[in-house]
Length: 435
Figure 1: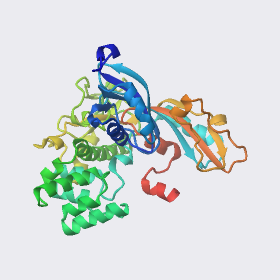
Figure 2: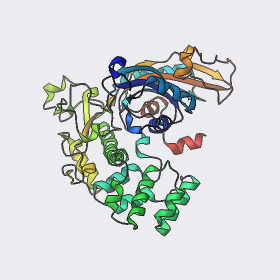
Figure 3: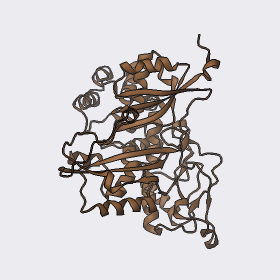
Figure 4: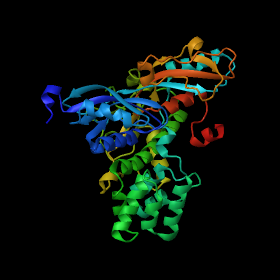
């Protein structure tokens, strides 16, 4: 029996470095190797599959020796820097994320162009849009599924999740088509890969019930985090549209009727339920009442709400824009009360403008030339710990790379910062054309 008092706590906290795997996938692999449950691990937020990422994770009643021993069997994941605590990490327990990003085969007329773009990002920030990854890459976006759920159109939501898509992998496309054409949950379940957790959860329900029906119960079988992701995606979709309207209508200056808040920590992570389901109690959001009050605020103080039953809407033209926009979808921002817990959203607030901190770029060092399009240009955290250095720039190299570095608050998207720097789109379809 372990002496957790002697360790200093029953939660072992460690740094997890991973590459080409998302956080949940990496944690599930670690849990499988250690023969424990994934829920024994908690973390402040999820990191995307694409990229080399580093984050803190806490493990309940699992020793550092055991976790360290799993490193030999993990692929693309390294764990280290252990400590113990009596408190576990929870979703939302982070202030932000630091990014080091490599822009390969960069096209620019002179280093001065890079200077201008980075100075603009540092000094003026960018519109704090939710990144396109929030909405998925399929034709039926996650926000469309969320909208169907909010409207109680349960069968439509299931159809959107299960419908074939031209972008599907061959095996997933075959599984979708088989189910939609034959309503055969048993065989479709065998065809879907284990990574398709949402689709498999639906099919498991239909197989148990021996019928394809009761679609609300079927959706309830999907893991809670995935179900909430769908409805949060609709909130994000509305927010993005309203951010565009706010800038179009009033520009980058606060106006009477805007919502503002001086408290810190408004932008809490929205990859868990805490951000959009339940606003922080210490957040006091108010509408600017008159021209005199405007002097106290800058554009970086302005908030826009994500629709829900417990939020204020701007007391100017943008409040009416919410009503107008959501009416097109058969929704009313002032009537968001629902009986189903998952779709009964309180709402939340998000800053209109994000201004990154710790923005760094050194033209003489961070613009380099290289020949091999596959060579890593930025060492990962484990490589840096071992003393690795980035490759030397080749003066006559074929390609240019620009390496940029900045810190964003939680729930803010580096892809949107890159969009501002490069003045180009970040959609998956655009990147497929570049490949």
